Image (cartoon, rainbow, N blue to C red):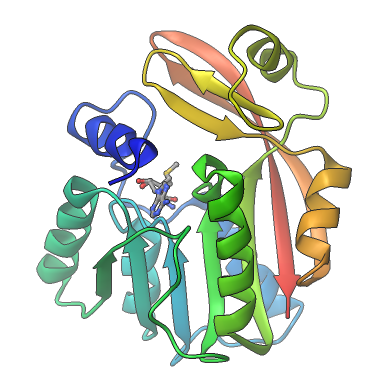
Length: 228
Ligand SMILES: C[S@@+](CC[C@H](N)C(=O)[O-])C[C@H]1O[C@@H](n2cnc3c(N)ncnc32)[C@H](O)[C@@H]1O
């Protein structure tokens, strides 16, 4: 497993940052609402790919709605929790222990909707290249892609981290306490990167507050609704 994979595994064994919340993630629900209301798109009988599925809160929810879900996750501990929960709910989810920065064992143009809910931030640049190529390969034409990614614009905490704990690659920093490297994006950077592969239907910045080591941190995210 990659070093980042080991970090995630440790994190799920002794969580400091991740959630084991079983409710679907709020911004993901808003994206699903957008599909229903604005795009008149029914989330039922769809083939969905959840990248970095964690403990399965979004995958299990989408399976409950009657979709066919593949959840890829690098942490075995997280994946086991996701599987146990699916079993408890009587759901059939295709959970796979794999790296989203490596080629996917999924056919071309076969997926209706992809989710990346704050997962690809910890890929390195090589992994990110593969992830972009693979998501665009497996998504059907007109298929949708929801990305929730870390935003650096106007965030003092990010600015400090980039200065004090820089990672090896562009716009990365290391969260020292857990050893995790994260990539942050400016709006321009984000649009250029995803715009090469997808049409950007909607892009907004949203602020959240996270408690980490008993301190509250401001985290800014890009919420992007993309289409192939
Ligand atoms: C912030 S958590 C979000 C989890 C989930 N998407 C959610 O909304 O609950 C990021 C997840 O991505 C997973 N992850 C990070 N890098 C990964 C990789 N290269 N391949 C697969 N999963 C990865 C982590 O283990 C973690 O579960």
